[in-house]
Amino acid sequence: MKRLETPIITEETISGMEDMSFFTHALIFDDLLIIAQKETNCFVLKSTEGLIVLDAIWPCREAFDAIVSAIRDVGWKPEDIKKLVLTHGHADHTGCGKWIVEAYRPQTYLSRRDDRFWQEEPVKKERPDTWKDYQIDVYIKEGDVMVLGDKTIWVYDTPGHTPGGLSFIFPVTEEGKVYQAALWGGSNPPGDLASVTCYLRSLDHFLKKAEEKNVSVALSNHTALDNGLERIAYSQKRMSYMPNIYLVGQTGFRKYCQLFRNLCYERLDALAAEFL
Image 1: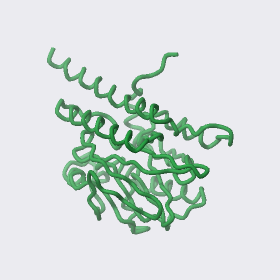
Image 2: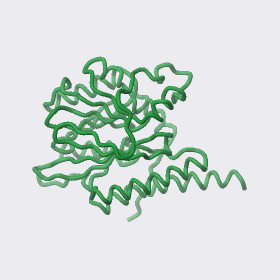
Image 3: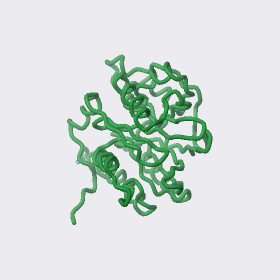
Image 4: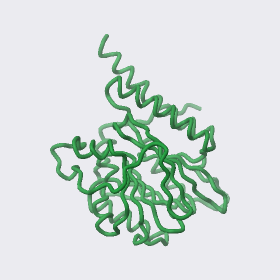
């Protein structure tokens, strides 16, 4: 059977990242909630001492309202948000953090390099709504461990998509079983040779760490990369006898990461074509 080796990304895909007319969510593990608009995801991880929000979609009130509504819908309390953890400094991930911080006062986490990147190089320089609008409390880097209650998040430096991008590994549970989940913090490879090379090195590094941690759950921060909206729809209607679609095994996670390698190969081909 023929399958896609890279996602289909169009101008509509890119513009969809700013379309706040649609949100959806699902509880994909007993302690992990996903919230998405058309193209971008965030996750909420539940611990015994509160909630951790991973990325925050787009900087607008609608995204904040959708995250809060989803948390309440699954029976959790947004007042329990204790940490806001960001993979990188693009506005579609720093997102609605301003409203989360104002409402619930969580500690905020990002790499020092990408905090500066967010400040100095906003994704849309002509758009003040994408400029840095809240403070980072804790700078995190390779080897750091964030702990809240029974949850531990391991931090890895994965520059390339942005200068200070981060990726995370953490445990999730279903019916008493614990699985290791991985969130690759990058997505589309950058446009110059040095940065693509950096991206590929980061991917190799994260794959090695994922194998050491026995990662079997693949999480994506963009829906176009993993049939995200379809996976959420499946999870919403999943019957008790059906498998968890996010649980792909170690081999499946390696195959998932090959998608990012293929995107890099496409970018390298395009760069090479410029010199022909």
